[in-house]
Amino acid sequence: MEEQSSLFNLTVTPSLRSTMKTVATWAKLCAIFAFISEGVSLLVSFKNGNLLGSVIATAIGVFMNILLLNFATKLQAALETNDEGLLTESFSNLRRYYLITGILMIIVAVIVLIALVFVIAFASKL
Image (cartoon, rainbow, N blue to C red; front, side, top):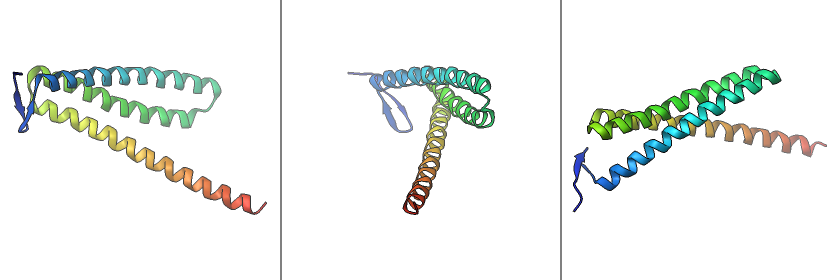
């Protein structure tokens, strides 16, 4: 039978602990590659002259990936030390990451819908 520990009245089995470690590893890898991608994107925008939009997008991306990296780092530390506080902080970072992602997706969807309305409105006048 698997050894179990209890966090937040939930049973964390060794299998779940292993899965959480894997999630943290992949989240850290994704954040690091996203940082590299944002840096390359910013360099390309400097070369092409499209600076303001790229700086804003890069700043948002860097902030979001800091949250993802903090999630991964704190989750790994929480699993190593059995620290509930670190586990709470890690998932708080993940919650904020997904909250910002959701808000940005809603904003993009609204912009696309507005653009679609304008396209339909102007296309009918032609």
